[in-house]
Length: 131
Image 1: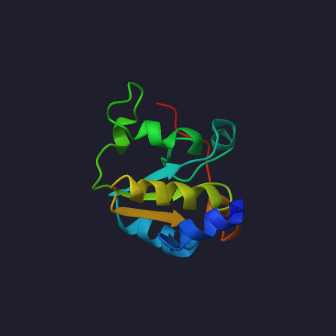
Image 2: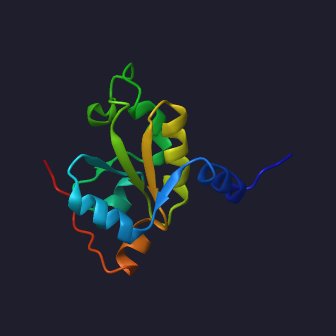
Image 3: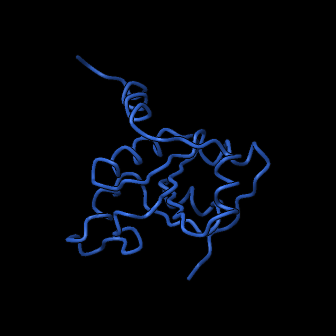
């Protein structure tokens, strides 16, 4: 059986938790322990992101969360983190959230509709913080 991209996204969504923009904004305002993970490409990320999101493009996610990988993203190595993943419209973030769950992350949420839904709901996206 051949699957389409939409089939893969639907499968991923059936195995993950999604928050809409309002729920995500409420949770982010109330708590400081949620890690924001933007899985868009760097050029997209540079156009604006949510809060102090960490940018790890979907195409390198598995490597960046592998502690044996020399260029791993140390901020994401704790499998007990609560991670809110987002992309532009929600497809890549659903796939990324599903992958993270398969890799042992227990508290992963995908932002339904991505940053587009976030902005359409009236929430802001700002230039990334350079450290």
